[in-house]
Length: 196
Image (cartoon, rainbow, N blue to C red; front, side):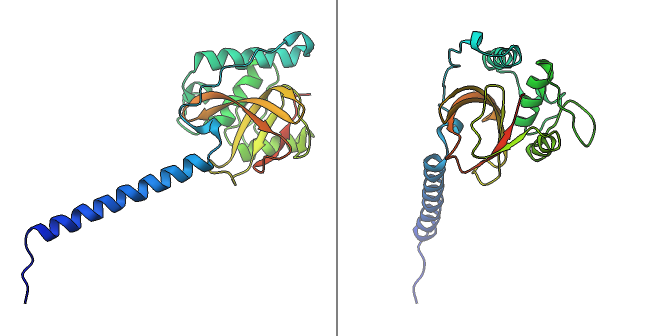
């Protein structure tokens, strides 16, 4: 019969803690590898230089509003009338309202549509939805499904170069961020809400 020394439980506890730390590191590394760079905390892509003279007045207004909000970096509750919730669709709703292109929530009639699913339904009901395969224009809204690791999401297109769109979105790690997306190959894109 052996008697456990006091050191054995300490070694087991240390191995258990080391195992948990290793699992957390592996999971974090996997998330960072899979996550698009636009969701990483060190993504500091500046707002692009955009020649608004070639845009319609509606498009130019959207771009200038998005640029100003990207510089201000206000909290999400600013765009959601004080409600503390996921705010990417609230950001889109706020920009469109300020641009004189207000949305109308099919459930409440409000200018604010807080959910991406309802935002997609709104654009479909208005005949302003284009499915994946469409190359967007400045001012259009990108709608993502929940197959990405961050779930449903939405952004506003501020520039287009071929199949690549530069977009700006709110609620990306608590910030308003700029990034690019290949509109034809990004598997999470459901479609687009058109400005025009």
